[in-house]
Image 1 (spheres, rainbow, N blue to C red):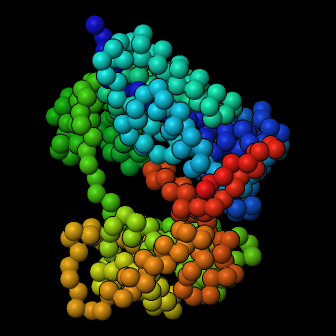
Image 2 (cartoon, helix red, strand yellow):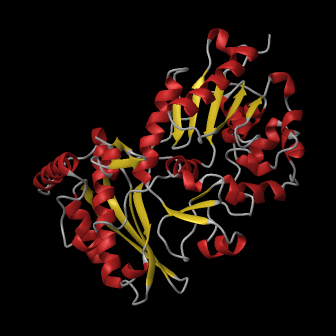
Image 3 (cartoon, helix red, strand yellow):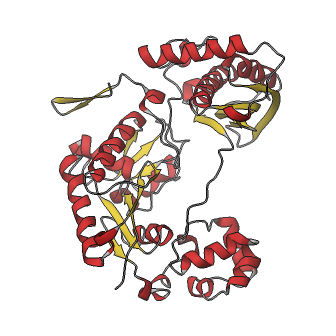
Length: 418
């Protein structure tokens, strides 16, 4: 009997679909979700109606307007997307436990017992789709992949969109994968594509025809062997990866594109990164800053610090770096904390860091209880509304990162973040 071990769910055009759910006037229209209302930024999401015109994630707003004259641009509301994400997780959980939340719009579920039978897995997938539509929103669609391992289930979730359901059984391999491009497989990006081409691999059929040793050579050791086994349906345990960085970036709105205001936004990014670092129970000893300018040039620098997790020390590092910034018109800024050390490996310091750390944690408690950015260092009043927390593809912020007191109006009702 053919058994399926994993169900992978991918929400279709998630940000744009949520906006269409909340604003009926946007339904069946091309929608682009943007970080700020400016032609110099890019779309972070597009509805399927917009995708039909060639607009996709990463398309510059100016190009999106050229490709689709009727596109409706909507400024992103990340707290809303997190709120809906939580509702979707709850809906799925009524049908099947979630083994891993991979990103804001992707979840993986492990099938057990009779759920692994093809007919039952398909019925379960259809039930999940119905629960999302009934319990969360009628416009929200998802594509689901069913396969012997999580890797192939994710591949399957991308094979039919929107609202697709793809079953990959062991006996379907490898033929069912021949129609894909090599970059349709998770883990094959531009750099790996170039490496594959150097080894004469241009198609999925050629990729799947490689021997284990050939993949080991191309990937470099055990990763190649692992990829070879995953393509053949083996259900391997997920590799554990340590967090390496914590950071935030922001495209500046037109009124914030001065060196002085960019510095204030950078200060806010440091506040956010430091608070997140503390919630993750890490320490850092390196701060990096990056600025992209309107003339398409960029500048970046970094400073080493004692192991710390307090905001004040990081702000002092930022101030030191900012002295060297070129005198140009900035377009975007970013800060990154790296060389991370978990709490249990943090070294004792002879510097008087305890007071600063206690102060930072007290600020965190006040900001969580009474609202984000209530307590902060420096003159950030001008930029409180700037650089709101965004959702990274593989990191979902807690609502406390965004605004623990938000209230979203929906028709005549309200959805509260409290």
